[in-house]
Image (tube, rainbow, N blue to C red; front, side):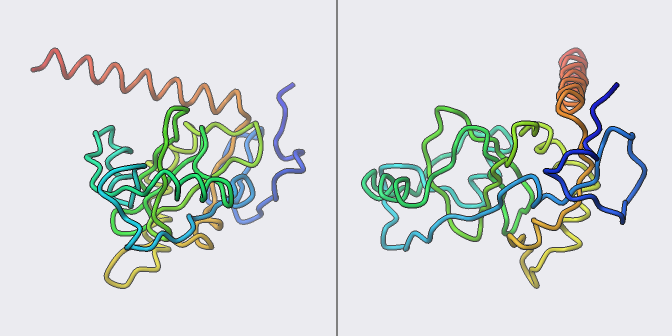
Amino acid sequence: MKKNVRHNPHYEKLTDIPFEIPDSWEWVKLGNICTISSAKRVLKEDWKETGIPFYRAREIAQLANGEIVKDDLFITKELYESLKDLYGVPQTGDILMSAVGTIGKTYIVNKDDCFYYKDASVICLKKKHADISSKYLKMLFSSNYLQKQMFANSNGTTVDTITISVAQGYTIPFPPLAEQKRIVDKIDEIFKSLDEISLHLV
């Protein structure tokens, strides 16, 4: 018998459901499964030409697209270590999201990453529980369903913006962990097949 996340006390049951999902899934608010925060402010006078990379929304978007970031902003190692000790820095598996301008671009932090990020223009999602796949969440954020939520709830007037409070209220379809992994593997398989087809067409 499949474990039903409706019985999981970690999650708040939502009664206003956007569409039908399998019985073993649950509709949840993003804020119920992730701690959503931003960075401590780094003053412009602390930006340097060398040191620890300091990413804004544009750099997170580049990382999300698999591009190589040409770092033009840095902070000193001393400042980075101070921020790390006092407030924490991005950890393996965290999701960094561009929150100003090109919104909703997501990057999963790797174990070898060492960087800090700009407050407000980037937000950080930390998983609250072990039964959450970072890759599943990243794929959700590229879906039409989540993209519509992000742009419909953008607080920007001339520039699209995602605030922490708005992100906490996003509703997402949430399956058990094994199903999350199957979905990720299947989508990866499809994209790999499409890439192989594209190579043959060149």
